[in-house]
Amino acid sequence: MNTDSRTVNSIRNIGAGFVGQILQAAVGFISRTVFINYLAVEYLGINGLFSSILSVLSLTELGVGTAFIYSLYKPLAEKNKQAIATIMRLYKKVYISIGIAVFILGLCVLPFLDLIIEEKPENVVENLSFLYLFFLFNTASTYFFNYKTALLNADQRNFITTINYAAFYILQNIAQIIVLIVTKNFIYYLSAQLIFQFLGNLTISLIVDRMYPFLKEFKKEKIDPIIKKQIISNAKATFLIRIGGVMVNNTDNIIVNYFSGLALLGYLTNYTLLIGILTTFIAQVFNNISASIAQVNAIESKEKQYEIFNMVNLANFWIYGFCSICIIVLMNDFIVVWVGESFTLPVSISVMLAINFFMLGMQNAIWTFKTTYGYFNEGKYLVILTAVLNLGFSFALGHVYGLLGILMATALSRLVSNFWYDPYIVFKLGLKIPPVVYLKKFLIYVLIITFAGITTYYIAQFCNFSRVINLIIKAVLCILIPNTIIVLCYKNTPEFHKVVQTFKASYQSITKKIRKG
Image (cartoon, rainbow, N blue to C red; front, top):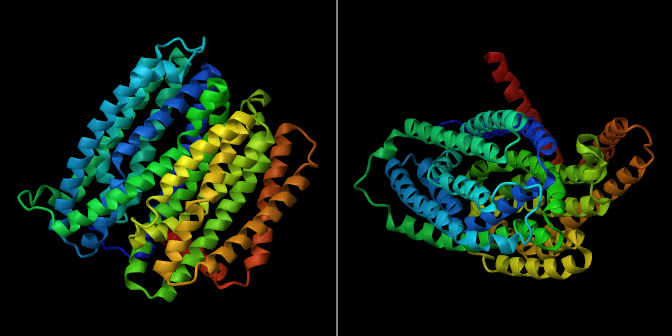
């Protein structure tokens, strides 16, 4: 089991996450470019639509993953091998059942595909049901292996999962590029994805078995009833949270297809691909510090916890605020340079995508603390309200404003529900600080990033050169203007100094390790 310090674990995990994500983003970007050039845009729509349908089916997972990871923190800290082994054995049984359930539910969707896609695009030659089965098998099969990654994550060894996933993802995309160039066949493209994802899952499973041999012991011992009861309770709460998250984040593609068809959905998926790369890249930080924050919340004072929260929250705002401005200012220029002007959407779409990106991102610090405090039951019903509001707003605003209205609906549904409630829970119950303190800080964040965004956008409009030169100059403006404004506003605050100190310490630790070997 892991014996390294929180700092070493966090630095190692974040470093591996960044490197892995850069490599994956580069290869994935090349693969998408080849995809666009060799297959019709409707295939992008099919990719986005089927992925969204199966994300909804993943509700079967019931949120048990988060509940199990939380239950592993204490026995890992105490080196309690028996508790770890019994928890993982239960985890395995649950996830195998979930994989089977996802596959069966997925098969039940087959008769309704003609209703979801009323008119099959002429450019799509394959049978839609056959294509859907590829997506279904790929999704369901992951549950038979992926439960083991929870142990690595809880033990602050995310870097192993990251390296393994990155390696097989790169191999998968190289294979898919070759397949598209040689055959231009979507079936072969999906087959390559299925094969390499299976191999990646199998490899991580074997690695976990080798690193934690005691998992095969304690076969007669039963899980502690108290731990089992806690897992069930937390899983029930996270199930509701998962329903809300999926219904808010993964139904937009289905609704866009309903109002606008697969072609527009295909254009949108290029935007969401780029934003997804950003989101996954940033998530490396927060995913890899959650176990460290769990330790802070378990053993440190409330003052120390609040200090860490302010540091994480400022870093969160800085990263997501800067990236949101980049989405608004650079997205369309990048799409033009990448695949051509015909694939662009109105600037208003980029603005709404950036708003949703910022709103979701600003919850990261809150959710990390809420989860590591163990507050799974608090607010579990409110996320259902978020989901219902999102569907209602999406159909109402989508009917009037189309794609823009659907994206607006997502922002509105979050704003009136869990966007304010989760911070309330963390501050009121966890940090023991009046929630209005967070509200004031957040409003200041919004004012600063709005000012920085408007300033950057209007200055960027003076660029009138070639496409590539425009993109480069605007990128430089995005780097200079927002970051300068944020530094000037926060350079004298304790959290800013803490962020800088942490960055310096991380840099020194990394360079020291490099020098040693």
